[in-house]
Amino acid sequence: MISESTLTELLHAAGDSVPVPADGAEQVRDALGPQVAQRRWIHRPSNPRLLSAAAGVVVLALVGVGIAAGVSSGGGHHGQTSAAVALAPEHAGSAAGSGKSDQQLAAAPTAGAAEAPAAPGVVNGPAAGSGSGTDAVPTTTPRVVRKATISLQAGDGKVPASLDGLRGLAEQHGGYVASSQGSLTSDDPTGTVVLRVPVAQYAQVRDAITSGRYGKALDVSESGADVTSQYVDLGARIDALQTSRQTYLTMLSKADTIGDTLAVQQRLDQIQQQLEQLQGQQKVLADQSDNATLTVSVGEKPAAVLTPSAGRTGFDKAFHDAGHRFTHGLQRTVAATGTALLVLLAIAVVALVCWVAVRSARRRMV
Amino acid sequence: MEDLDSWLAAGYDRSFRTAWLMLRNRDDAQEVVQEAYLRVWRFRDSIPRGDGRDAWLYRVVVNATISRLRADKRWRGRSDDGELTSLPAPEQDGPAHQAEHGALADRVLAALAALPETLRIPVVLRYYAGLSEREIATAIRRRPGTVKSRLHQARVRLSADPALAAWADEPAAGTAGPGGDAVRAEASTS
Image (cartoon, rainbow over all chains, first blue to last red; front, side, top):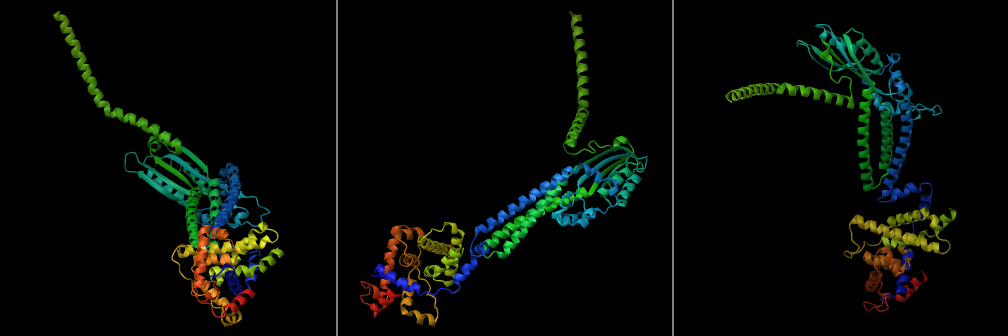
């Protein structure tokens, strides 16, 4: 059998005869240069650190944008009191139409300053592409969801004309009729229309409705919810996800193994899904804040046009409705059991009369 | 950085040959050595001083090669304790190389290639890389007794190989190879 020493000599003789790549050392020297990190993960057949690095980048991006969003949201809160000012008539006539909400949504995170006047809620600042960054105080146009509920008492037979006039009023100010319902053929004709008008036209439309042209204003209630912080937060999260998506797309182009490709692609799908959800939420907020909602009820009699919870929202409306239904339920219960109570009362009276008569007869017999 | 660069360049030949003997593939060996050197660069603060750093570098290369073999097994679905299959024939480096290095290297490499991987790796680590049986056991995650058994089995197989029978103290085939002394002298001087 071959001895260990002989085998060692043979293996060294054979091994030393193996030709070494002439440029092998140079290739390693190149790899030790500035691109060491990049070459490492490219050459690995399966590299979980690739995804770890990507996750780190995403987390850093989210944290960074989150901080920026926090700053922007703070500005939004400070601007809450000025939200009403922004809705003042001096803004009337601006081009903030309802049909632009989608474009505003798409352009919101990166919209330039040129589009800002026509896009309420668009974040202007360095991240929005306004430019140099030296004048980089982030400013946010407040986004307020405006709602109003108005009850009108029209004259006899004037409810249909009043409703038609309200529809025309909405179209005249660039709005539209979201819904309309009425009972015009009954003895007490009533109708309700829901108008959507641009926020810039809100004050004018409200004043026109309550001016008496369409009926006497019996009740006017308004509400405004500042959604600026929510809108800005959504925009920041969308920006972060778009940055992450771009990062993963870059990594996808550099992934050299099936495992890396699938992992990156899976993460990309998740990001895309989250992105679409956030964009949908931002779209709803943009529509609600771009267009004010005015619910107008018209009737000939005051009682007929006043709805129990008109102008109420949230818990206030819920408690109000519950109280109303409780009272209404008691009335119905009394109404339903009234006959039975009357019969029982009659039977009791007859029984009492009989009892008294029988008792009197017994006393006479005694 | 300059010292590190020159030191790694000086050790490249031996590192590459060790990897090649284990992997039997030029590209794989080149990539493994590069991977090992990148590990060294990454942990350059841990490089020992003095003579020990050459042995440390060698261990890093061996570990990288073992890792590559394990990764290849996962990809191919092969088992280390599976059927003892022979590797493909060694790479042909062309007539110029064969004329330069003679028949000895080719015969040894052919015999080595005929060994299954479970035997070839311990042989390379023990008789070319110079690792102890315990170190080999740690590297290939087997018990020292298993390594000892495999080394013995490998020597038996190599002794039975007609190409190496001439170097056996007790020839398995009972015949000494023609010109055995001359080749042994060649092996000693190379």
